[in-house]
Length: 394
Image (tube, rainbow, N blue to C red; front, side, top):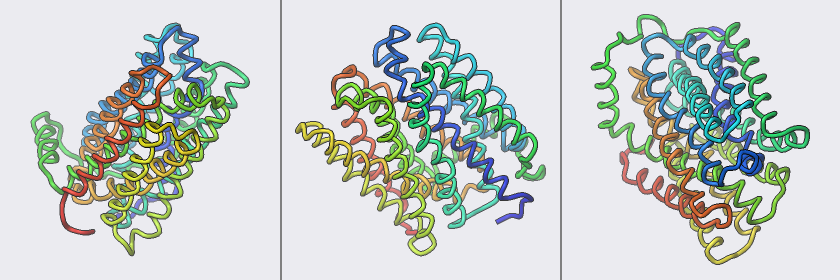
């Protein structure tokens, strides 16, 4: 652990940066069915607004992570927040679904900058089990966003349209920008920064893809993340259109599942010193696998809303065990290229999530089976890859 002035303030800023991605995704979910109707789009086309955001987050991390290893962390955070604020405003005034999709792509790219640099900042300051504890703590801090976002989004819809949701994001990002400009300190000393050069950057990514201390954990975490985004993409249509929940009640259900992630992450934070991140990761993957199978059976057998909700709670809550430990294990040996490793991890998470999200809408808004299948494939795949990874127990 390297001393950094104002570490508590830095962690609060980093937590907010980490929470901006789930806030961007979850806040407008209660209004997604209304948004697609207002802009004359189908369910699958409306879900492309989510896919575009995920894709933007994924791709921008490659460049942002690499640049942060060269230029430092603080400068990129400020640029990302300024761009995010501008794109949120454009989303609020979009006049067509395709215009909104384009703006969401760039909004996601701006959001991805802060997301990837946040993980790199943590790796600058902490290592080992302490890093795993901090990643779990960040999930608690950023977990406020997915817990509150759909609930607040549903309430905003009582006062205004879906456009008002994006105006709220403009205000929030402006506050974050002001705080970061005043209080965020640089965590990567100049002597540790990499010299620019495309060949050197490509070599870093190639080495990471061949690193068995990185790739299995990053892949497991990415598939678990994709399962979560399949749920995020499909659940508004499944729970509101098929099972008849109101946007407000959907927000409550979504908040319960997000709270499960937060609770599981804090269990992980308390146990990681005694149990180790590898065993906690395995426990999370096994729990997710059970939840995925129950969800698939509940949908296929028509077991009803209660069975689906219980299965979703088990499945989604397990992500609180998987993500902090998969992240800590993947980043453990990457102190020489924390930004690039964080970027590649993020590309896997949001890239696979971007692919998974629209698939759940292939049957329109009248069938829950595509969502259940995609979640099951991702969850079981996460367990399989993690089990085939490095044998050492950490």
